Image (cartoon, rainbow, N blue to C red; front, side, top):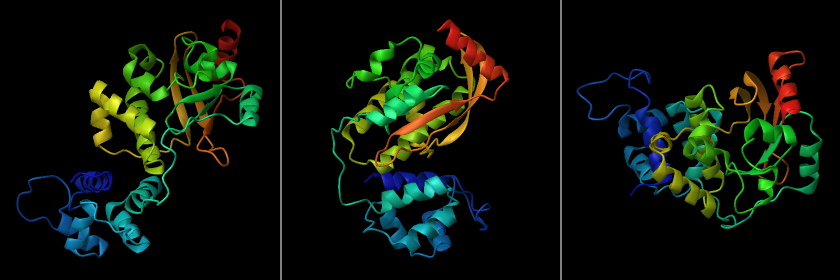
Length: 275
């Protein structure tokens, strides 16, 4: 039986060699990484119990077991949280067909922001953007498209299924991984979101690149960083961004920033004029 929990544990187990884990490896191995019994020993659980975890017979694993597995697998904080959500799923299921809508005060704040700003949900749908955010991320689309709740711009779908959209990014491999990592992160937070599941299924069928990355189980909440742009209107520049989660929602306000007097600031000023 293949499960999200089992796939994640196997992917991380395969990524660690016995030598990296401080073990002595004997004999040829059919698959890379640690064997189940080796990981069980490192985590301090029985091989039988660990095998049941991979087969999703988890029975709500304790915090101690989850923490031990995270240490043995050398998981980062985001991956650790993702493991906990998979191993101890909540009893209350979110609404399956919930339509996300921006809070009016948040939408007004987006419009009042001077730099590029977008509001996205956990599926990477754009719920709102200001003028500069629209010109930066999707100048080919109508500004009002975010108001069409059934046909909102989705940044992940655009990246993988619309080739011209990829040209906006310099480091396309890193952007691809971050998109998939964010959806993996979101799928742990919203396991019963039918719309998210359908989108993942669509992308897996239509994009070999997405399917390959999805199988690797990257985890990334994309909370901050630097994006490298090759913009079709104003050319090459880098922007820092922060993406805090809005209170009582799963919405993120993506705020892009350029230091005053920098080439990036000049590029944004030019984009604002030309747009």
